[in-house]
Image 1 (cartoon, rainbow, N blue to C red):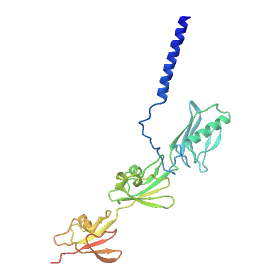
Image 2 (image 1 turned 90 degrees about the horizontal axis):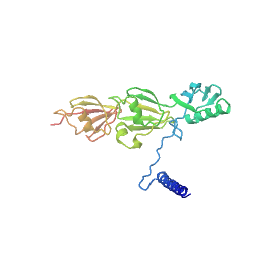
Image 3 (image 1 turned 30 degrees about the vertical axis):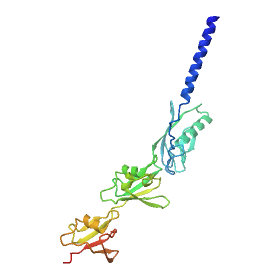
Image 4 (image 1 turned 135 degrees about the vertical axis):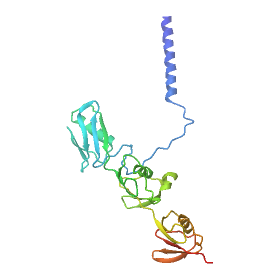
Length: 281
C-alpha cells in the first residue's frame, strides 16, 4: 500500500509539471511585441476580403477532388457566370472566390448523395476576366491579367518598361473616365501614393516624349526631348549650348502660332520653337 501511495503522488507531480509547461507555451510573453497593422488590398482588382481570387467571365478553372479522379476537369466560366460540372450541372462561379466556389461544389456533391464528405480543390489556370490594358511606348503593349494586387510599377515591369523615347510620365485612365498622370521616376523613389495599385479595367498609356524645336545659334539645332520643368536655359544646354556668337538674353518663342519674347528662365512647353539670336556687338 505504501508503494502504491508513493507512485500515485509521483504521477500527480508529473501531471502538474506538464500542465504548468503547457500553460507557459500557450501564453507567451508579448510585452515586447510590436502590433502589426493588417495589410490591405485595393478594391476592384479581383480579390475578396479573404484574399482569394474572385472569378469572372472567361476565367478557366481546374476542379478536382482530393484522392479521386472520377470527377472534375477544366471548365470555363460562361457568359452567364456559370460553369457546367458533372453530376451536379450548372454552378454559379462569377463574382465568387475560389474558396466559395469550392464550398458550393462540395455541398452540392454532398447534398446530391454523390460523395459523403468530398474535399474540392479549385485552381485558376487562366486569368481572363480581370486585366489592365497597356498601350503606347512600352516594350510589349497588350492586356495584362491581374491575379493579385499589382502596383503600377509592377505592370510596367511586366511589359518591359518604357522605350527610350517615351515621356517621363504614365497616364492611367480608369473605367469611369478619371485620368491621372504619374512620373515614372517617382514610381520607384516616391511613397505608395505615387505608385498606386491598378484596378481591373484600367487603361495605362505611355505617351511618346514631348518635344521642342530650337533654331539659330546653338550647336545642335533641331527637335529635342522636353523634360519636366525645362527652362529656356536648360533647353539651350540640351541643344549643345550656345555658339560663340549666340545670346540667351532674349529668346524668341513661337507657341501655338504666336511669337513672344522670353528670358532664359521661362518654362518651355511642348511644341515650342525657340529661335536663338546672335549677340549684339
